Image (tube, rainbow, N blue to C red; front, side, top):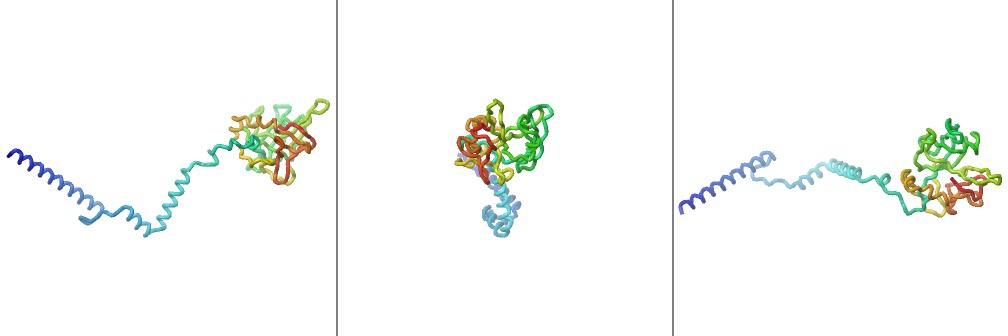
Amino acid sequence: SHPTQHRRNIKIFKMANAMDMLDEAIADLEAKLGLAPGAPIPNKSASAGKKSAGGQKGGKKNDDKKKKKAKQQQPAKAKNAPANADQPEICKLEFKVGQISKVWNHPDADKLYCEEIECGEEEPRQIASGLRPHYDEAGMLGRRLLVVANLKAKNLKGFKSHGMVLCAAETKEDGSELVEFIEPPEGAPLGEIITFEGLPTPEPFSASQVEKKKVFAACMDGMKTKDDCVAAWNGHAFMTSAGPCKSKTIKGGVMR
């Protein structure tokens, strides 16, 4: 029985020693937290409540900061949201009302004009068009027209072209081609985005999507002028706030 008693004593001693160490640790923690010995540790949420009660302004600021941070972390919808793939093909393109403010011959291409076109944007768009066989410079300068605005920029003989101008064309009796601009009505402001009669409001694709999905090519068959020279896609007129867009004389002509 003696060895058993000895083991019990050692066990009690160890337990007492452990309790002393725990008391010491608690005392040390109380000292660090500035608490009176044996005082309860304050509840975290209660102290937070006191803080906000004592300084509601600061609490509100922090809340606003948190909200702002959360807002910043949300994905940017406009940039990253996929475009509406179910809309009619023509609504995936962006046509803008524009006006030629400067025009000159492309130095390295006989058929190309280089143009600066005002489209209600910060800078005029630079666009190259194969219209030299159809218009002289005087017929180009100041011309109001439609620009296909969400096409990928293309290098045309060393000139970077940011879009294209929209024209109607027909073959004349002598086999030559007549080409005319699709023109918006006088009251349509520069930069206005074209809508289509009887179709939903366009949600244009990005230039990359237009290229990848070959949207313009898919629309070409349906783009024709009507019997009243109004530009249309599958019969849906190209509209502005001031009325429809038209060619001067071409009826039933392809648009490109």
